[in-house]
Amino acid sequence: MRRRVSLVLGCAVAAVLVGCGSDGDATGSRAEPGNPVATVGQVRFSLPTPHRVVVERRTAGGWDDPRVVFEDGGRECGTVSAVAAGSTVAAVVGCDEHFAEDQAPTRSVALVSPDARTWTHRDLEGEAYRTPALSPGGGHAVWAQGDDLLVWDEGSFRTAPGPTGPAQVLVVDDDGTVGGVGVGIAAGRCVLEVRTGGRGAPVVLPIADAHDLACREVGLSAPGPSEIDGDVSGQPGTGFVADRVDRGVGTGGWVLRARPPIAMPGLDVYPDDPARAIWNQVTTNTRGDLVAVGSPDRQRLTAQRYDRGRQRWTRSRVVFDAGAPVCRRSVEDSGVLQGATFRLRLVCEGRPLILVSRDGASWGHRGGWHDGHQ
Image (cartoon, rainbow, N blue to C red):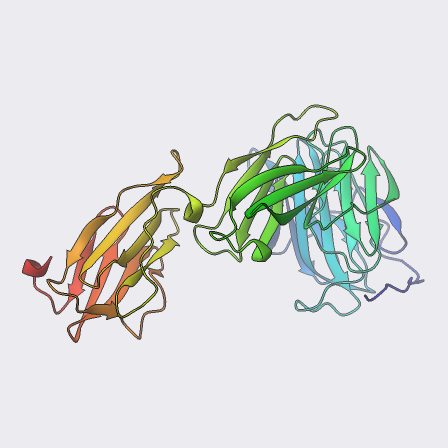
């Protein structure tokens, strides 16, 4: 692990704020913003230069009031990850002496504002790039840094030990209690484990049977103080969502709101042998429609949709019948989805065939087959 060497520089960056040292308060000077890199709540961040962070506020007339909230000519910054709760915003700015996207930054900065107007920053130690945790009421924020945590409690910073056990994301309650969330395997099931300091056994939420989901490859994120999202490398159908049960002080309960569609009832499973079947591939489009398309026998091509409200799959229906088991995936096929349209490229009896649908409900086909084959 690379450790940051403290930088002692004359920090003469205008009379505004901002930059050197471990702490800083900023009202910020007006500045020209760059392209937005993160938007949460009523603010959005940009990096007009590698040395400057600018925040804009949402107003009735659109985005306005761009202000410099951090600037340091001695480091380069390339990312911003943020979270909001009410008027409070907490962010981590990924910085290094020479920033590189493929390396963990070691001179990152914590930013926090209780009102989206006045900002405080603090240098983070060691490798630090994860999105901070924020309590539902906005009074507490936590950043992972190096070997411990940086904690903000209603205006003041302190350090604290990290959570026990493996944790991909942090959570913090309205009483300031910090916890960690990870994924494990228990009794043949993939489970979400929420460990909250000083509260005994972790909260364990079953996600799916271990044979339905690649548990060890699940990645977690926390888009807000009361939500945890997970999936397997962004693969369609693997996503799930957990929510806080109670947003009050001193609670740590979580429930699974949405389970991974690939583990839910009704999804047909076809043989993996390409000589016998075409596997039932799950995919989604840009509108969020989730479908599974395949063939149990290389003759009848089927499709089914996922009903997110009921959390189950519709019955599969035949969308094309070749009349004989003569279809296979085309060697040019790179997946069902292309843009916003579902496309499954096949070869049936030596002739190309493309199944096409915009929403997964109605399907058409293109290629050398006349309508009598459908």
